[in-house]
Length: 146
Image (cartoon, rainbow, N blue to C red; front, side):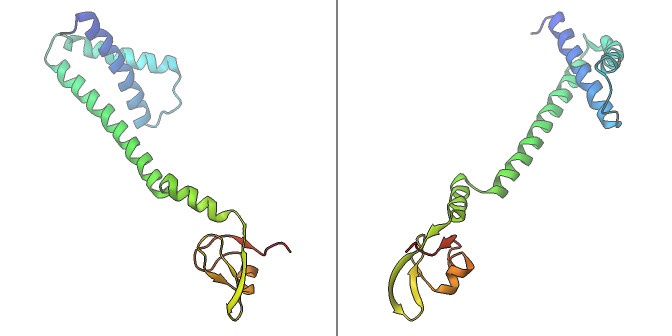
């Protein structure tokens, strides 16, 4: 069980959080630290009578619930951003494909296709080299140096 001092400290911290939350909710994002402290003190004065009551448990539960909700919302947004980006492997693969690589000169089994993509190994034509990427896998390519 918490001591009375711990309860008061926790309540003061709660009042500070509540003051900041209410100020932001009301659109007062740029209140000074002193103004937030004054607002917090007002909340504390009103809350002081609840310190030894069961109402404090309800207040603390609400406070903790709100903190977890804010944290989980932030985490969910961050997770969604990571999902949009893709896995590390997908990012590395995409970066690899953007790095220009020299095609491999091969014998012309099919007329016009005398190069091979260094990434996927498919045959490429002069037009494919002019386009600057493999039409099958998207690898950035360039003609071999002579």
